[in-house]
Length: 373
Ligand code: GLU
Picture 1 (cartoon, rainbow, N blue to C red):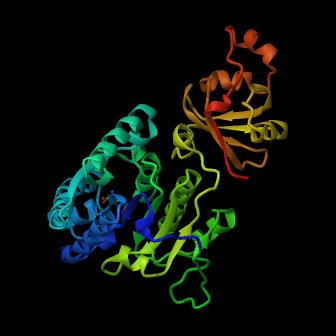
Picture 2: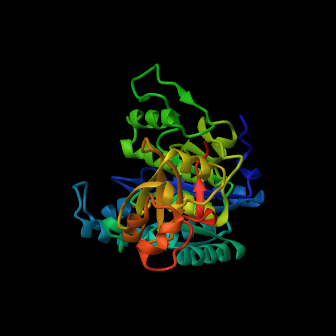
Picture 3: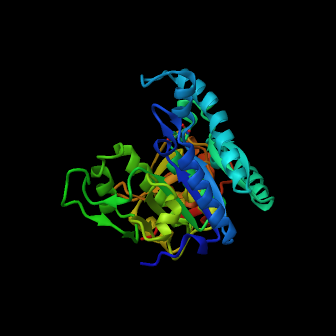
């Protein structure tokens, strides 16, 4: 197994699930948080930079506002997040201060990673925090995020942040110690996977089944996070956070699943495209076009067999093969109406159909990322 001690990583993003930080009855688990901050201080002393993506605002806010366990309406969860986040960030700040570290709260909404300009801005702010020696404590701004425009889960948010910040490791701490091929609870045959070289459809099928301790979505969003991270060259670890000092425990050999990063990662601008959470549309391409794309060519209208989605020029679209499998993503050079009009046409015929001088490519190769084959 190619996993190194945590401290040998240059920049680590650690994501913490709500259940680890918040007890339904007693609220914030201070002792556990203090132990995690000791781990963070240890990593920092060893030379690693650490960013934290902390869940728990809504869970803690329920407790603070006395909302109990009942299902919450959207505006109630938003209110819970408001009350919970202030307590959560305060606790992080206090516990890190006890270890001699400063904290900086960063609340993000979906557009902060999905829109290029805001992405660059968020990256600059977080870089500056790190440069000034603070530990960024990041969460979704749940108080203003509404259902259509939110990450919804901090696994994918953490992966977007980790790749945005070029972290070499993403650690997802939760109440399960890694990936099993079947539901582990009450199932002695469930096999634990210490290393995942690549997130294949078979691996994804395991996540769908291994749902006993977390919700189905729980492991699924972790694998989505794994795809975003590993294709950008960020390794990922799923480890249990249910013990004190969970990061030190990983270094002492506690069980965890390690997801190997791609050895040909996409970087920078292309990793931003590849990791986009919700492509705005889809293009199906024929076999010839798929082969041309794999060899590094741009996507020409002639190779496109169908177009769907209400995308605008510059949006990210998914490229599908004839079987409907996603083979890549790119920034489209046309609005959806024009893309649909020119799909399947040879370049020489475009100007007549469009009534203006066309761009040669539907997706230029500089704006295109193909998946690992
Ligand atoms: N942002 C949510 C919170 O702080 C948590 C989302 C998640 O659990 O993934 O309550």
